[in-house]
Length: 76
Image (cartoon, rainbow, N blue to C red; front, side, top):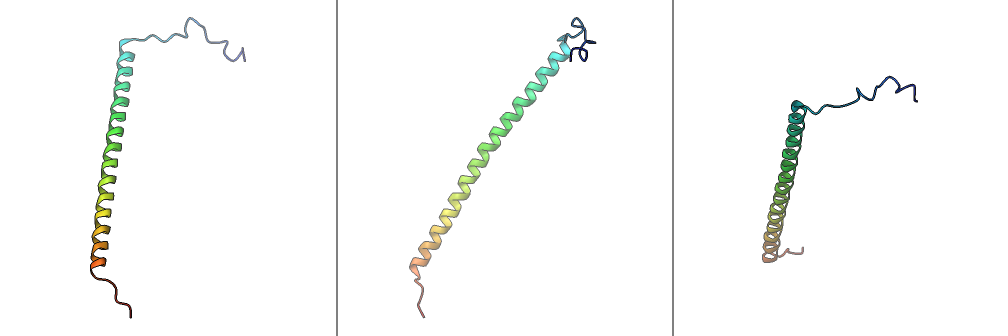
């Protein structure tokens, strides 16, 4: 295991944080934040649409139930 990593010098194993890397990090972070905001907004919109759909279905079934109570079935 020691021989496997023996070629790496510790002085060369540094990562200089230059302006380009900083800009790349900020850009990547901005993209992730925007994606998260979009995901959250999409989730909120889906919840609103689901509630509206449930309300329409409930209103329709209520209208059908009221119509059926006005015209009872004739038993033959």
